[in-house]
Length: 113
Length: 114
Image (cartoon, rainbow over the protein chains, first blue to last red):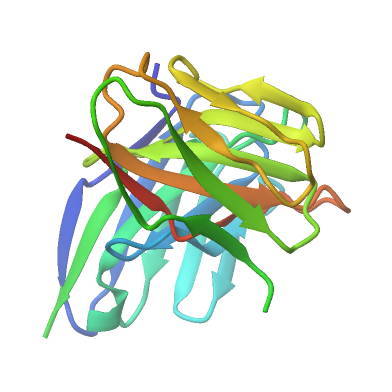
């Protein structure tokens, strides 16, 4: 049972454009929603994270939008750059039980010049 | 220079052999995790440990074993019972202090079974 569904699987955006990646979750007990960025052959690095008590969080060019009623959250990358080309994973966890992360299947982003 | 180290970066194993992947952290984190990553899939949790001498199975623990004798170290053994061991293995750690939930990942070990 996939508890976090991520789309699209791949995305091509022009330099300067907006990249949007969406995730939906099923478990209403989740209370922490991070996004990770992964370059080929490297470990994932935390990009930005949000808790369900806020609807939006912005850090530089990266914004998370969170819709608790719809059980959806999304990552927006403004002014996308070629250096943003990577795989992005959404994830979710809940307090207790080891704070285990449940990951989406990833989105491969390519930013073209 | 704090962080998580994994060794080796690449590992080759013959079928029927056990192999142990190393994970060390100097972040003074209590919790440590092992994930497996396959092409086109997200990360799947193998085992996790919240304190020394204690660990719990994740979603895909069959064919794997771990130990947590020291706070800094959480080695993963891939046994011959694991049917499809070829994958990218990632170790992570998390501080239990405060309310942080952030897991920090190591650089990974790519295991190939020949």
